[in-house]
Length: 231
Image (cartoon, rainbow, N blue to C red; front, side, top):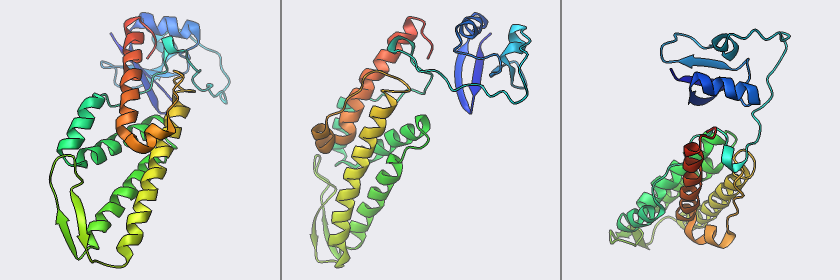
């Protein structure tokens, strides 16, 4: 039977009963953490499943999860794992539209693993500004040629369009470097793999560059699971 464990709104597992006993002994799982199997109607303390009876004061609050080495990565959801080459190809053949969508997918995942993440808000704002660029153009020459932006040339338009183009470009850069900072923070604290991202590569390649490193990190986590580490 497999058990899921929850602490402070974060779910871990599934684990076998033997895994729970081992992780409680090592301190990675606390007796006061809640657990539930598919056959159980409600969440119960881990101590109930293991037959333990911890004597804790009512005001006791469990400490936050510890930081794990690479061989014992913390139980965060894996990043989207589409190969970076496919991200590049799909972006090329959809005139960069796929890149916009995939960037939002990565930012949404970042929001899950780091709730205070702001990258998704900047990326969403940049997408809205891009829409207004087109909307405020009186005439636009639309090109659907692979590798080219889906709108290329504008003729005339509202005077505010040029301002929005500039603001959109700045917001995109802010979004990229916010994402870079949040990725480095997460993968050097919660899941320490020593991630260091180049500012130049971030500037020019954005989500494709991020995806390349996330593919490598997912492979490290897969190998850790294979060795029986806590994920």
